[in-house]
Length: 155
Image 1 (tube, rainbow, N blue to C red):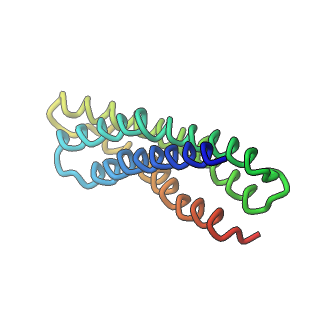
Image 2 (image 1 turned 90 degrees about the vertical axis):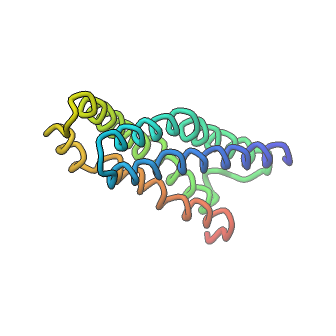
Image 3 (image 1 turned 30 degrees about the vertical axis):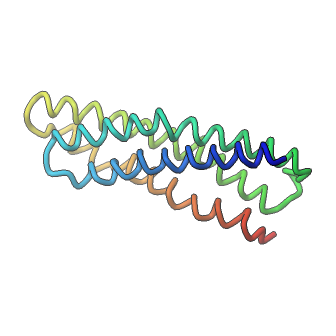
């Protein structure tokens, strides 16, 4: 059981590094004054999502199941564990893909605007959509609840 706990904690650290290296540059990109800064920050966010956030979230998901099995917890009847699974699945299957799609779209448009030397109407429209900003923020908002549930086990 100690091995699975350790592996799960390492996965959580990887996931939190991913949240930091992905969402913070997205927030900064929305306030960046120049296209060069926007494209640099969005490239950095894309790299953080690919290298840290995706593997960290998936590793956390599976190592959590292995740890729960080793600890003898029932993943279907334990209330706080069910709520934690729902939040994790929201992040994996809804928030993360929508943030990733929006991030790639804005990133490509920022690179095109950088090449043209001026902000394009398509980039303005994509920035007005706020898709990566909203779903990245939703991932950040769910993290405290994901920490609170196993610490306090409210139900």
